[in-house]
Structures are given as structure tokens and as C-alpha cells.
Length: 292
Image (cartoon, rainbow, N blue to C red):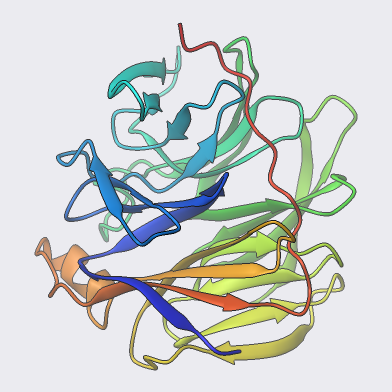
């Protein structure tokens, strides 16, 4: 693949998502939710908001984002924001990391562990939850190390999850959208972001490998795609474009993860890249949350 650099000079990019003609992304350490227009203009929203690991489109044109304050909506035209989920009754909720719409108007999302998910003690583990369009929240899995990338198979019957430092797992999706018991899909431990293509391939952004790895539906590795910057931490990826063949990749520079664990801002060398894929991605649905 030939990669084109679309944006640079950031600390730790995450959450790329194509909405209409624009590509949205976040900087989880420097802060901000960013929109890159086709003409190359980049707008920043909520510049002080950090740890926004997931982005998607709501049905009303607003943007949904995760973060340490929960799940919010953003109206980019008016500059207004509001809360979708700030607490989970009966549970310790330290915020929402990565997520994926469920094709029913709701969202599967992962939570942070104590300290944002990357501290070594991790006294509060991560969990996977589901929130429906009406705001009902249900637990899907718990006791997890670090919740990261999520995706659905082309038919919506399997849910994939990168549990960083542990492996890639797959869950069967029941008719009501609930997840069955997980099973190991691939032993890769450095998976971060995740995307699924229209042929059922599961693409993992690998933070230690300097590459993206596509896995076949049986879990075996099909191809390894290096980035132009081999020492960059690859944090996340997504498909988009009119034919869903544009592949966007967000990096954390060469020291993003280590700097975050040290409680420091890394050098501003993180970038957003784009390439063309021979296989289109699985379209990502919109959520249907009320934002009035």
C-alpha cells in the first residue's frame, strides 16, 4: 500500500472515523477532537478534552465521542455539546474508550481501567458495555485488561475485540444484540484499534509491530502492511470513502505509549495516514441517540 500523510504534528492520535466527506480523529494526550475536510483544512473542537478514543456519527449529523467523562455528542455546526452517558448505576465508570455502533442505533463500548487504562496496578479492570438508543446500558463482559478496538463481522453475527496485551477475541452476537462467551481469535497481544472489511477480514493496528495485520475469518494472519514510519506506534485505523476502500491509520509517533505510561506528553510526531485498499471496509452504522 502507498500511504499519504494527511496530518502531522500531534502527540497520540486515535479514533479515526469517516463522516460524510470528512475524516475525524482525536489526540488523546494533547486533547481535542479534529475534523479534516477534503481541502485539507483541519478544525479542532473541545481542545482540552483528552482520552477520546472513539468517534462515530449520530443520525442527526452530530458526532459521538468517548472520553474520561463518558460518552458525549458534539454539534460541529453550532459548537454545542451534551452528555449521552456520564455514569452507570451500580458500577464504577471511569469513561468510555473505543467503541463501535451496533447496526441498531446503539453502541458497544469499552471502559477505562483505573488511571485511564495504562497504569500498571489496574485495581479497576475494564469492561465491555452496550448502550441502546434509549440510554439503557447492559454489561457484556468484564475483568478485562485494556479494552481497545472493536468491530462487527459483515453479517453482524460476530463481535471482535482487541484486548490489548492479551489477544484478539471474538464473541457471537445474539438476536437481541447481547454478546455470548468470548473465545480467542488470535494470540496477537499488541493489537490496539481494529477494523473489519467486507470480506470478513479483521485488521489490527499493532502498537509494537510498526504494521497493520489483516486476519482471515479463521483468525490466521493474511497480510502484514507496514507504514512509511516503521518506528511509529500504530494506534487505530478505519475504512471510509464513497467505496469504503480508503484506509485511514492514526499513529502515536515513536514514543506515544511509553510517554503516556510515564505521565508525559510525547514529541509531536504522531500522524494520520491514508491509503487505498483492494478490499472495501465494512460500512459503519450511525447511532440514533437523542441529542436535544
